[in-house]
Image 1 (cartoon, rainbow, N blue to C red):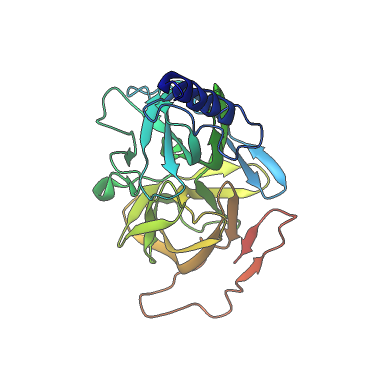
Image 2 (cartoon, rainbow, N blue to C red; image 1 turned 30 degrees about the vertical axis):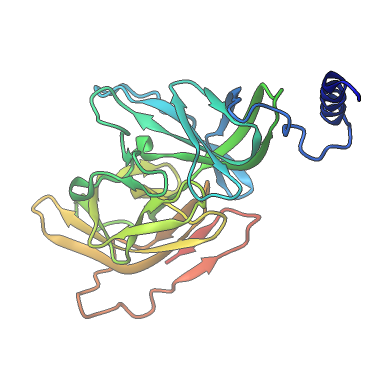
Length: 314
C-alpha cells in the first residue's frame, strides 16, 4: 500500500506544473481570487479643437478667476460582461491609482474642471457616470471654457504583473462660433441666443451617448471684433454624440442699448462634431424675422467637406 504522502506530493507537483504552462489562455487563473493589481492609469488629454483638418489649439484656461478651477481626472473600469464599473477612482493629476482584479476591462477616462467653491464638478454632476449631467440649467452661460470635458474609452487587459496603463482623452464637446459679416445700421448692445431644439446636456461615460436634453435654454453674449472677418456674436460648447454628427438649432436676437430687438435670425441649424469648431457666418444685423415670418432669400448653404474649415453661409 502506497503512502498517502506520495499521492499528495504528486497532486501538488501536477498543480505546480499546470500553473507554469506557456499555453494557458488565462494567465491569471492560478491567482488568489482576492488578489488585486495596484494599477496606475495615466490619462493623456488632447485639449485641441480642430477646424477639422486644420488644428486650432485652444489649450487649458489660464485666465484669473475667483473660483480657481482645476482639472480632475476620473478612471472607471467596466468588466466586459457588466454594464457597471467595478472600480472608480479619481485624482487631481493625470495619473490615477486603483486596485483592480486581473482581467479584461473597458477603461473610461473622464476629465473635467472642479473648484474648491463648488460641490462636485464645476459644470457637471459627477455622482453618476451613466449620466454626467450639466449644471446651471436656470442660469445657463455660453462661452465658458471651464465647461469643456474630455473623455477616453479603451479596452485594456490587466494582468497580474501589469503596473501601468494609458488612456487618450479628447473633447466630449463641440464648439460653435456665430459671426456677423454685415454692418449694423444701429448700435448693437446685447445678443441673445435661444436654443430652439433640445440642448444635449448629459452623456453616458462608457457609451459616449447623449441621454438627456433641456428645452427652452438661452444665454446672452457680448460682441467682439475679429479683424478682417466680422463681429463674433456668440460661442458655446455643446455635448456631441460619440463619433457622430450632432445638430442643434438656435435663434439669434440682437438688441440695442434700449433693449429693443433690432435683428433676428431664426432656426439656424448648426452641425457639430466632438473636438471640432463649426463657424457660422452671415448677415445677422440686416435680418429681422418675426415670430411667424421667415425672410425670403436668406441663402442658407452648408459646406460639409471634412478637409476644410466647416462653415455655414447665411
